[in-house]
Amino acid sequence: MSDSARPWVEFYPEGVPADVEIPSVTLPQLLDQAVEEFGRRTALHFYGRDVSYAEIGEHANRFANGLIGLGVAKGDRVALHLLNSPQFIIAYFGVLKAGATVTPVSPLYTAPELRHQLQDSGAQYIICQDMLHDKVARADVQLKATVVTAPADYLPLGARLLGKGKTKLPKGGPDLHRFAELVKSSPAKPPDVEIDPANDLAVLPYTGGTTAQPKGVMLTHRNMVACLTQFLAFATYWERGKEVVVAHLPFYHIYGQVVLMLGGLTTGAKMVLFSTPDVEQILFAAERHGATVFFGVPTLYELLRQHPKTSLVGWKKMKVLTSGADTLHETTAREWEERTGRGITEGYGMTETSGVSHVNPLQRAKRGSFGVPIPNVLAAVAEPGAHDFVSPGDVGELLVSGPNIMRGYWHNEDETRRTLVEIEGKTWLRTGDLVRMDEEGYFFYYDRAKDLIKYKGYSVFAREIEEVLCGHPSVKTAGVVAVPEPTVGHYPRAYVVLQSEARGRVSEAELLDYLRERLAPYKVPRELEFRGELPKTDVGKVSRRELREEAEHFTKNQ
Image 1 (cartoon, rainbow, N blue to C red):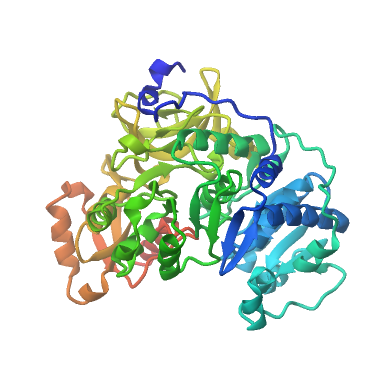
Image 2: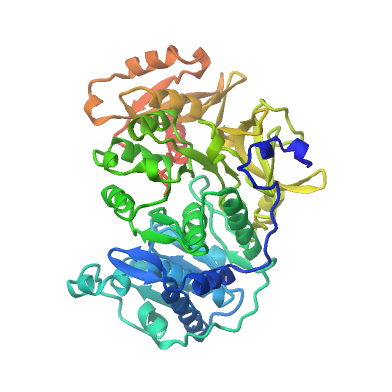
């Protein structure tokens, strides 16, 4: 695809080329470079304790040697079942330095969900938080070794003496090891393990929230390094050794892992690290430590927008405020800017794209758009399920191609063949997202293809209805799903959470009238149900899958 077929390149930040060279290095090599350049600089501020780049580098080497001593070999999968912490970072790079593959597991997973990922990935080693060890035991998977850590391992001395974060660890055994002891007792010399960036898997994350059985996504070192290189080339505001990042997004998720953890640690940034996203602590840290960039998700911006202490933060002094992982509602974006005087730019990525594929140009962002493809990424819109590209302005399925695209799904060749397709000599990833591209190459999100509601032949986008509902001053959040009905195909059903002061005062009829004034008749939900809360995925999205299952159950039992 030529530059003439990439209209977005014209709107790149000054000096950013359409394509950048991807270095042939591994993720540990990028960390080692940062350690050499910024050894004395603070890498992490963790609840009052500063951890330097030199300490991160040394402990990662020690942990890698400790894992090798436990029997971890090149190509093994090692699960990380950890909250954000210095231990997550040290374990992550330690696993990679040992030549193994990291498979990060959500701390919110239940024992059966954990069991699926351990068994499907074939992981025989796990690094887990002390408070999560009980779930590991209940998962009942045969493991060669379990390494357990507690928050106190990297808390300040005062906090440890006061017992803050101190939790009793499980009793030891031949297959149970303490993280701190493994680091302390292992040599600091880097292990002698040869890694092939192009072919060796770095990370095996699992997609979640949309299917009953998540799939493992195979990401090589080259995939991850490419994504970092492409993103940082586009983010011209990002300066080596000068950024301060509030690291509250979960590292097990690809967004927090790539943009915050890897983007920060490979460029000498200082990360103010939180194990859990406490809103007041995030606000305090952003102002106290002088955050230069801020990355969040729509649900966080909505919470911050309404928080009384948000006005105490100097948002205008930051270089950029970015939202990803879900669609930012127009109401949230508009009212945030009215309150803070600073706009939020949207980006887009998937686990299958190593985290990022699109970003809004900072100097020319478009509200409602998730931006343009970053360097080396080709993007197109095709007829859903077909290979025919559609014209600018038409809605279709987003396809992307580039060096950051996954190798495929772990042990799932059928799904890989459906998702990675050859068109005009290039391999494209079918994202399953319905979008449109405007004449300037900016992309706009509509919905997941599977969430498209077909009502009497009309296309109804659940997100459009949700957007209108969230524009009502009494609505806090909303979810819309399709309900099967033989006479019409499917019809929309809405679930609404009202603002606390509106509960009991706003009726279903009032909201439906509000929708009828703003939507075509076939888009208005047939049913609207009030809820105290809506089910969420582990990154804060409304879980339409769970709502859809409820709606189908409701229909069957009518």
